[in-house]
Each structure stands twice: as C-alpha cells, then as structure tokens.
Image (spheres, rainbow, N blue to C red):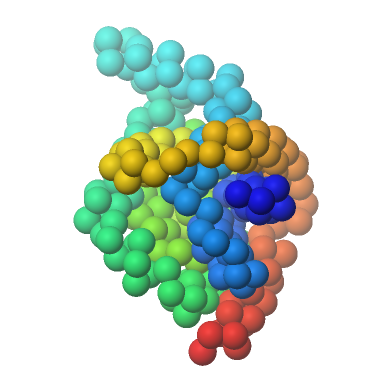
Length: 265
C-alpha cells in the first residue's frame, strides 16, 4: 500500500470509529471517491485492532474494576455497579452478534451501496438529533436497566447497516433511554470492545482462508496510527461532549448524506 493510503485510511478509522458518523461508511466511500484499490482485509483488521487497543487502554481502570466485580458476581459475592455494567456490556453484545452471523453476506455486499449508506446516514442522523434534543439525560451508564440494555443492543445490531454508525446508534439509544451524553458515550465505547473483538476474529478467519500475502509494514503502521488517533478522539470527544452536544455530528451527517444522494442518485 502507498504511504498516503495507509495514513489516510488509518486516521479515518481512528477518528471515526468512536464518533457518531460511521467509520464503515467512510472506509467504504473514500477508496471509491478517490479511486484507490481496496485496502484488503488484513489492513481492515489491523486498524480495528488499533482502535480496540485505544479503548482498552483509555478505560483500563474501569475495565479492571468491571472484570473484578463481574468475577465476584459469579462466585456469589453479589452485584456492584461495576459488575452490573460488565453484564450490561456482555448482554448488550448478543443482538449484534446474532445479527452479524445471520446477515453477514448482505452486510458485506448489497448494504454497502452508496445510496443505502446515504439513507442510513441521514435517517439515523435525524434520530440522533431527536434523542439529544428531547432525551431526559439524567442517568449514568451505571444506572442502566435490563430494558435499557436490550434497547441499546438492538440499536447496535441495526448499525450493521453501513452509514448507521455503531457509536451513533448506541449513543442515540442511550440518550433515548435517559442517559446523559457522557454516560451514553462511555457505554457505547465499552460496548465496542466485544464487538471489535468478534468482528476482528471473523475477519481474521476470512483472511486465513484467503491465504493472501500480508504486508506487515503497512499493517503495523496502520495499527499504530489508528490506535493513537482513536485514543485522542475518545479523550477529546468525552471532554467536549457536554459542551457541544451532538448537533455538529448531526449536521455533518446530513451534509454527507446530501452529497452522497447528489452523487449517486
């Protein structure tokens, strides 16, 4: 891969994975728009592992407490806010796991069409605006009920459609269920961990079956760039979220959707 391709795609993945604007849509559209060759499955895995590294490192203390208390809940020591949050992350992942297995072919083929991406970008952008404007925003992620978890999990499954945005869909659901902006964002980021692990494992199996040659230098550089950019993105997004709200991302989605409709309709 050319160095410019590596830099652009890795930065794009790192900066969009955790923003409510759909990283998958951008990774599909950029090569089409500039007529670049497909970056290959191996590179996709590398940049996703980079974003996984970023979120695990950023939330390392929270994840440690969640793992400890989750293990305690299995051995009869009762539940704590951290153990309930750990269970929420695990149970909230089930819908997207089942949907991913059931609709894998459609997600990788017909749903990658530019007009589908445009429609999802606009539709879920408007829903994000509604949730941010009218949600009660009074609870943290530690106050999630099992009903909340189910709703967020279903929204995460809907995000398999490119253009929807996994982070955007889960934040929208969190806001609709009364979470604060920061609480919805933090739960969305924690939910990304098992999803990225599962998706990366499936992609790794596909890559092994293909038996294609691997450009380890490109993968290593892509991993590093996506990890650093994703970490910075998480940090500043959480820092600025309460002040700026979701409106800038809604506007961006509407503009992007309009451009795609004009270009491909």
